[in-house]
Amino acid sequence: MEEGTYQLLFDVSSYYERAESTDTSFLDTVPVRFKTSDPEEHHHVPLLFSPGGYTTYRWS
Image 1: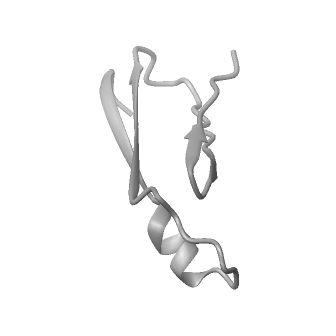
Image 2: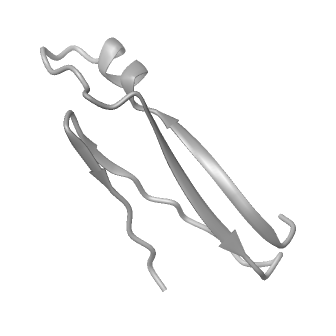
């Protein structure tokens, strides 16, 4: 991975369409943008979501 800014798009609505649940999602696609300056660094990009919201957290 080269140094730069990246964006991941999480297709949240498709998850709820496939899930065996009565929940539906207010969210469609969740963008997560991040920067990296070390090409050798290993990245984890967690996403915790519910039908009405989401959160991310970066561990150091």
